[in-house]
Amino acid sequence: MKQCDQKLLIRMKTKCVPCSLNLEALCPAGYTKITNGTGIPDCRYYLEIKTHTLSFPGCRHHCTKELEQPECCQGRWGPDCIGK
Image (cartoon, rainbow, N blue to C red; front, side, top):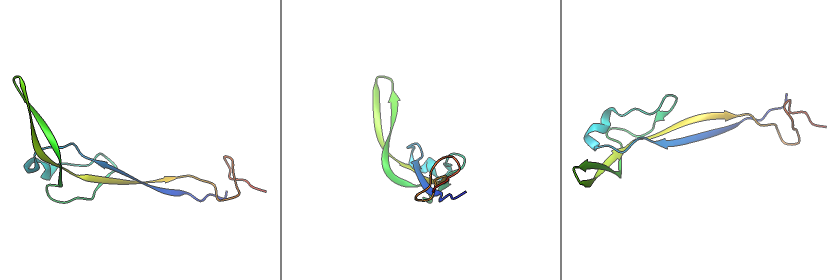
């Protein structure tokens, strides 16, 4: 089998929360946290109080996951990566 697997890097961000609560935030299973401490203060979270919605600056973490995507080498194709 002539396979030339491609590595894919998938990025995601955790939910925006108050920065003081973000120290313990975890990435989803299989993802690696690439930010430290309280994360990155690049978002806003919302609190609903009776008839009002208040917006506050918050923090979130950035996470990555590496996947291998099976691919045939150039000039080969099909489920078994066969070429001429």
